[in-house]
Length: 265
Image (tube, rainbow, N blue to C red; front, side):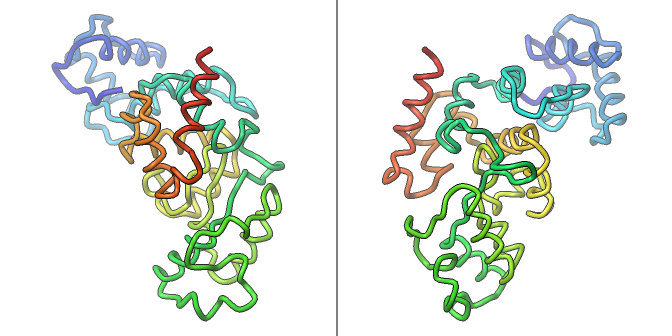
């Protein structure tokens, strides 16, 4: 959804007015962002702890869409539809990303244990950010700490927590930042782009439920400006930025395209 303000008009303004009415607020269904609509927006923002400026940006849209919405333990079609509307992308595009990242198996290995993958080469980098010399910690930690990506170190599945916990003993924040989390496998170091103040806040949400994982992914797509790639189904452009420089080697772009086609049949 686009950012809306006073004197804007069109279908998105009408959608805004409909959402405001669902919250019991007065808003004419005329598709015009008039003073009455602005007053209702400000009232909603104040009631939900948002900046009460009368401008409907992403955070206001997100709160409007999710207000009064109670997700189930697992994501439903309605959950995907809600976020697809919020981002103005196809449901199939969202599902394609989830399918490629976690095989469509969901966001948890076990209760309280979100799906993760620990990246030792990222841990090397994150330790340097914390002014730790990774070279000093390599001995005995060869399977969690190395300067370049190596596939052979992965345990896979819930055993990835063995690697994560080992890394946390060296530096918890760096370890969590070096891990991809949840059903969309967003890296911890992207916590700011997911709307969090620190990586610990992100990890706590990832452990809460698939709904929080989906919300964080949506914020990341928006703030990292990946939405146009999803909208255009530019899988190469999306994979290059979402999965990193090794996307081609792992054929993420082709996997995304194939998954999208399956969901649109």
